[in-house]
Length: 541
Ligand SMILES: Cc1cc2nc3c(=O)[nH]c(=O)nc-3n(C[C@H](O)[C@H](O)[C@H](O)COP(=O)(O)OP(=O)(O)OC[C@H]3O[C@@H](n4cnc5c(N)ncnc54)[C@H](O)[C@@H]3O)c2cc1C
Image 1: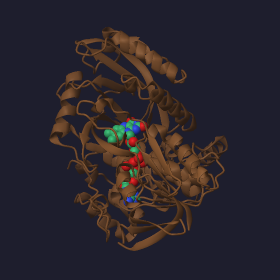
Image 2 (image 1 turned 45 degrees about the vertical axis):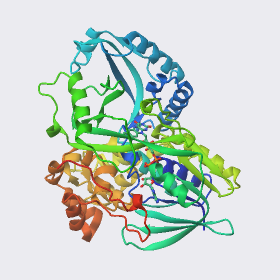
Image 3 (image 1 turned 90 degrees about the horizontal axis):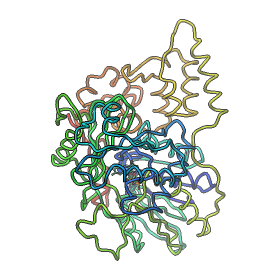
Image 4 (image 1 turned 180 degrees about the vertical axis):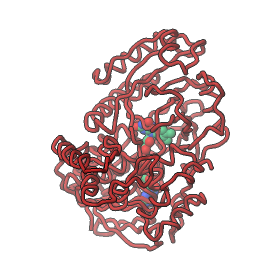
């Protein structure tokens, strides 16, 4: 019997599980796909205060998001980096550049002046500082700061899941809740189906946290939780192309429909997006119209020798923002972009259940805290402690000491991306070094182009619950987001990596991925349209 069953291993479920288990609750976290296998691996990777919501005068939301951003930046100085945003304004813009510049100052103050100051740029400044931007039609621009997840959203979520494990939580991916039943004594019985074996089993818990993101309404129905909030879905896509500029800035433009869109550094590539389209179902894919919208807009804004075309797309990201909306409210066409992006928590003491609506990666710390607050009000014994953040100085010193030993191994000249290893794995990076020290082949580069060594793969295999090759290529690393499929297929070391990760199932996992089969088709003996839907790998061959 668990104290709390958290359903959904996206950012909100991972944050809830980490916060609750750190506070002493016995937690189970189950995820129907891979951790971060849905919305939380399709975001823009930004940790930001939502400057654009100033346009709809959501000052309180912007203030909250800015404070959430600052807290995350303080807690994750390696994984979350302050990034300069260059926003350019052209003659068609609804606002003059000076007006937006004023907005950037307000934004900076709302964020407690935590980042570097905003700066106004004339058309000439832009032309000389960011030559890739077409300056002819610009009236000016501004430079301001927000932050981004250097290794991507999915890695960030996974590290929170690992935090929860560290505090004693049981976390399982590819395990879908298919039925929820409230027992007469007040406990919950959840029927879960193992997506790998198809086996059905039951989990019992005193409290439920519904963190199923876009699928939360469906689960609330199953639990007979009548909420006054529901989700509507906004589809957003990104296209990944070769780096368009060496500056590490995010370039910000205004698209034809007036909304902001970005060119964001992603590894050594650029991720361009996003769109904001109302859709009925969370299960979406990138359409030709989406691609055309993004490509046309970016081509309009950049000085490229040849415009970007579909052939330049290396990978695509596609997700739906689950937006919280009061059931009493009618959504009206034309108001879409004005819809609030606030999260809402609904709790029922009678049911012992909390449901999370909406939310952003940026407000995950707040959501973790709010979930603990709600369950503590229901009588769940919790003692709030620190549940997030990168390892402290002591661990960093241990890492540095081990690193000195590794570098001094005679005649080996080991050269690995040490900063990346520390950033991605924290104390796990110390284990990588120890394994290199104790095992001859630990430092051997298995995927040479990405500098991924055997010891890193072993850590991923042992600690990161990789079930399919897609889990590894897309969510444990950025490989499948920064390389086209054919490039990946010919990349030396992928097969060898499969052997380390999957042992005697290596060949099967490799074939499954490259034949573009969905990694796992969630099996279920119950009819649940959403869960049974194939989890497709939306990639360009
Ligand atoms: C295009 C786009 C760009 C965005 N950009 C940003 C950004 O830059 N910054 C930012 O802060 N936010 C951004 N967001 C918002 C943010 O990504 C989402 O709000 C957030 O990821 C939602 O997280 P979640 O945990 O609620 O949902 P999800 O990540 O979808 O997690 C819910 C999980 O529940 C699982 N699940 C569902 N049903 C069951 C079941 N029955 N049993 C077990 N598991 C189940 C699903 O498989 C899923 O993995 C963006 C969103 C989109 C779509």
